[in-house]
Image (cartoon, rainbow, N blue to C red; front, side, top):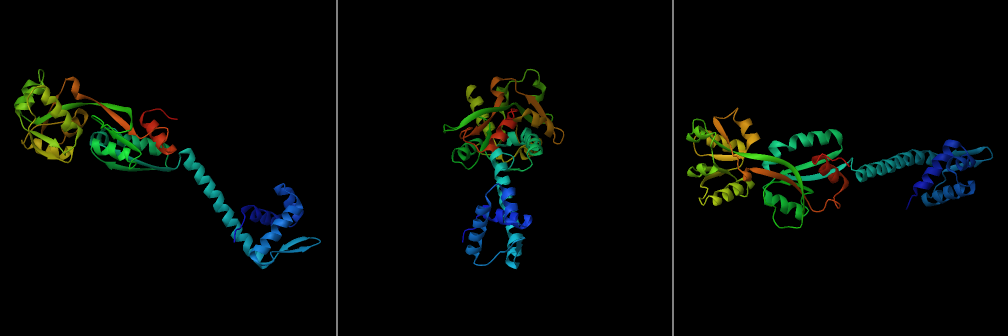
Length: 297
């Protein structure tokens, strides 16, 4: 059985107007067409829905029951249409975001908060990964938007600028390198063991690449999963490390660490947004990318 929403709407109009002619004027359709639609509805349901008199129409018990169900059904259909319009306009939807720890701890919380305030019906699903895994997730459609740093693997993705940050060396309080604060060069740090981040970290790769320029390897004593653990190890005197300067300043209020800014070109980083194709993104994801870039559509 296929119930036509138009027939249900005409049926409800006839009941509310109490005449077929009234439904005719209300729905802008000929009375004969209204009557035919209702007759077809009665045939499809195999039961009389209206009692027709020379004074108008009266719903049968079946007609009264149908009118209540039809109103609910039409209301739900209208809600479906309204909800789909929200999805097509981007004010409702799901955006899958994959980001590295530098972005997560410096910029993304504030950007998510302001985006969610503007688009409360858009759900953001967030996953923390290292840069190679982020780009792979975007390439394989496991994420809509990737936020990362460092060299993007050679995959078919679009890369857009996001924010910039600067790296700094962190050392235990009282470390000998702190006496060289004004004239500090990163090459001096290579005499010490490093506490690095987990395998695949963009910062580890940057440190290793910078060390090669000085023809001295960076010796990683251990690798940990987060900035807080890294600071715990360094404050205990187990080594030195590199992390974003803004994050180092926050952790210096908690841990016994000193900060040495790295005034060398490689220490200034461009954080970036990765997408498969901006034009092919769902509307909600497009709105999120434009919000990250400060360019509302």
